[in-house]
Length: 114
Length: 109
Figure 1 (tube, one colour):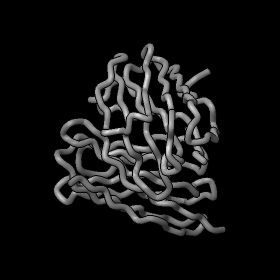
Figure 2 (cartoon, rainbow over the protein chains, first blue to last red; figure 1 turned 90 degrees about the vertical axis):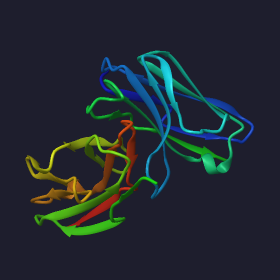
Figure 3 (cartoon, rainbow over the protein chains, first blue to last red; figure 1 turned 30 degrees about the horizontal axis):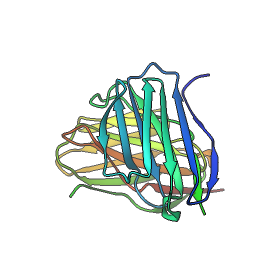
Figure 4 (cartoon, rainbow over the protein chains, first blue to last red; figure 1 turned 135 degrees about the horizontal axis):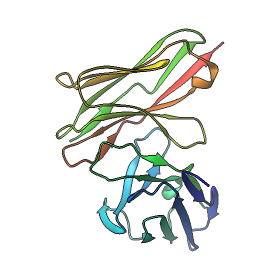
């Protein structure tokens, strides 16, 4: 496999469920990101990990909990979500957050909270 | 605050040329990116500008004027497959990417 892969592609959950999104990158990058994409809104950065260390947490509610066990894998653990959390969640990777290099995105996990 | 503005939607005809504008106000500047995103797919990198001027890459070109806080993406010889959203993003002084809301481009035959 190449690039950035995300699973699951689609997820429907109730407000009391617990689920996780998974991201894996095969590019040898050091930085990984979670973004939230809602219709007609700019991409919202949620978390950044650089060399497995969290370097950004953009005031994300605690019902979203990231985990980065190594520089190739990133998880987003979800619990007690709200309907307004329904969105496309994109994972991305790059060589270094401070470099000019572009982000490589996964295809996203479409989340619906009922 | 930091802000990126781009048109919400544009329509163009197959074979024609279209220019998508992006204006920005950010705390510092460390480069401007354009990404393409087809419906239901991942955004993919198109271009990067850090110096003023035009960067050409096949049918796509991107222009930057740092003094005006302005960029555009020029698409020539439009094809139906160019129907997508085009995202403009700027890296600020902290190397954080500030994103526009995207421009949905509709190509008509």
